Length: 220
Figure: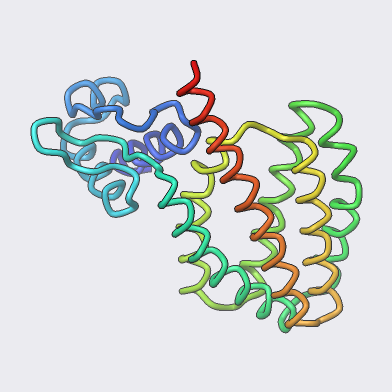
């Protein structure tokens, strides 16, 4: 792996998982030393992160991890809705039923994973990643797949703004199962509609969770 790729992946993972919080200044000397790369590959990595929208250059501060605003969440979901509904349609038309039938059985068992605690929730998120992979492999559209990857990267940051809510996760699993079942049946319109409902509920939950956190912070 090239040094710039190593630095990019390390910083990307830390920004997405929240280790590098919004507003964190990524000083070249400090980060190059910490990551064990020279400043040239670090600059390349930072340029890629700027293109991703995860960091930005700010006068007098240098390169800073970007904030995720309430407006950003709404705009992200507007894009997500357009991309994922079309992906669901294409997946329903091109799917390998056996792949999605296996996923359906796993999502039927998802509530048990969620109720088992933190480890089970991590397994459930891995299951969602498998679903994303199955969608990507079914749509047969490299441009759409690339756009979906970018959106999912930002969504990972958004999800961490809201604490795990087992009740919502169970609802989400049921909603995803409906999408999978529509794909298995080859019903493109139903797959898109089920995706629309799922994303609407997801956005409603995240907005409520983020608003609650802001309110609690102000009260404190």
